Length: 287
Image (tube, rainbow, N blue to C red; front, side):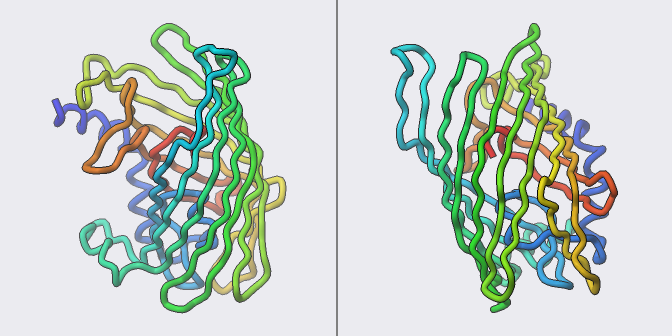
């Protein structure tokens, strides 16, 4: 059964693996400043002017408070997350074990975040959030404060066995480096998520679901794109398409880690200047 599940996920992910390999090989690809990697999550980025890097983010969470609303089933809650993001100097697809060698670590950042979940109705939920953290390039190339704040909205419903969500969010994301001017951008995102039972497949004793998402982000204040040997360009928008798997009720457990879902996402801007691949561990509502 495990082999069948793995085959199903790999088959669904094949369209994303080709651009993933290309990004890993492309030494002249455009890049996002390393301080933004904790916001964008696990994926390919560039550090400085000449070094490719792969950022890995892990964000353990802790429920601080939960309280029922009007003695009903709905509840509002306060959750604290502490995202740890490690940037890698190299990520060769033929030497994954060597990628996690401490000598390959390029940057490290920690960004504590607070999320507040507020049910408006039984289908509509709001989530205000805020974060402030600090990171540094480990070879002495500088440090930066990173921060973000905003609110997400999700409307969730079902059509038969198909579950769907409409998502919307507004945020401001910025960083203040130790050796240069501060920068920020305002991502305004709308998107949809779909999930559907994967036939009779089960994972860890629960029904397995396939999930897909599509999202469009408009940068109200253009995001700067760092380019080798050239002035910074500005990116106006980003499209994101992803596919993954999740269990019906509980997170997916891998060793000591727990993930709401596992998947891949492909990102690109309308003008083609920005491309990227990210690993998906949560709903867009829970990032």
